[in-house]
Amino acid sequence: MENNSTYTISKFKAATHCKCPRCRTGKIFEGGMFRLKGQKMNKNCPHCGLKFEMEPGFFYVAMFVSYALNVAEFVTVCIAVSVLSGGSESPWLYLTACLLTAVILAGVNFRYSRVIQLYWLTPNLHFNEKYYGAAYKKRS
Ligand SMILES: [Zn+2]
Image (cartoon, rainbow, N blue to C red; front, side, top):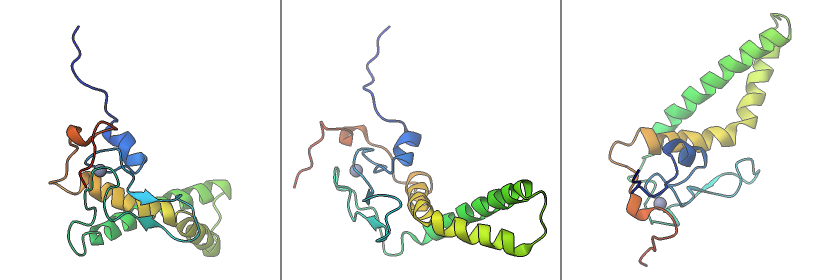
């Protein structure tokens, strides 16, 4: 059997590792996900030079994705709290759990809302194999 395809990282794996959607090699973010000094996003892909914020206000859509992620997390946490507390009816317990979740997962939501937007909600942005991996050298 002939196999001409070169190995490339899968879309899902590239997204979970926050890699650039065009080359799947360069990092979208600098630093760690849970760092306290705030999240820092690269303006351009360090590998292929893709400009992540394609137009002013591009990441407003990520706000809605972040909202959806938060709602999903709150529902999950509230169900977990209800099960673990034996069906407690105290609203403060649920509110505290939701607020803690929002604070703890703020970095995760920030990153993955933008990653989801770049990978699945930007129709004209696709993976291009010619940029993938160490073989591609950016012309400066
Ligand atoms: Zn790139």
